[in-house]
Image 1 (spheres, rainbow, N blue to C red):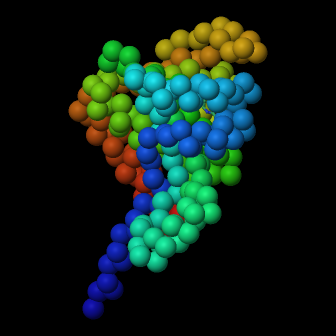
Image 2 (cartoon, rainbow, N blue to C red; image 1 turned 135 degrees about the vertical axis):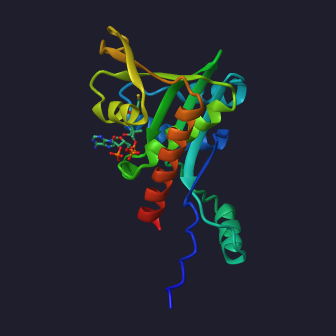
Length: 201
Ligand SMILES: CC(C)(COP(=O)(O)OP(=O)(O)OC[C@H]1O[C@@H](n2cnc3c(N)ncnc32)[C@H](O)[C@@H]1OP(=O)(O)O)[C@@H](O)C(=O)NCCC(=O)NCCS
């Protein structure tokens, strides 16, 4: 007799729009992640007024069940929330989404979550008829550069002294996002999700 097929594991993280109450935790990651962090007001303005911006966070997710529901209510009463473990921001331009920020909490790095966040952001951007995704990355930031090239971003130029401390930026671009390219990215997203589920559950 064949062994029963195990039920598929639920995805253990939730990718959702950033809200004002997330910003304190976003700022904590921001300070760990960048030599010149954005001020808190920048995130607040983006979340409140950024009509051409899309900002998302990633947090651990547990399936709501009755037992869990009580647990959640109890936690909420005590002011406990699921922590923010990563975030991404984009600005929408005509036919283009420009990634303005992306970071994962240092304790959660190297598990595929940065790749997942970026793929989910690209997926959201595509709903706004975006054909290209662009970004700048520090010339020294090998980890982020590898993440972007893995997903198919190509270097389109170098901006000399772009950052406040004088470091150069590479400008990178993904696209055009048409049928085959969208399917390729979806394939990577599915594989990344599987890898995360295997690791985290
Ligand atoms: C860049 C960042 C978001 C990546 O997040 P992450 O969750 O660690 O990345 P992932 O685990 O999803 O890895 C994605 C890819 O990045 C690359 N990568 C991740 N960690 C790496 C490391 N230590 N060395 C080299 N490449 C690495 C790999 O290509 C990896 O793909 P693979 O696992 O299939 O080999 C994270 O390192 C971060 O927050 N850095 C500080 C902020 C920052 O630099 N943001 C980018 C601004 S342009």
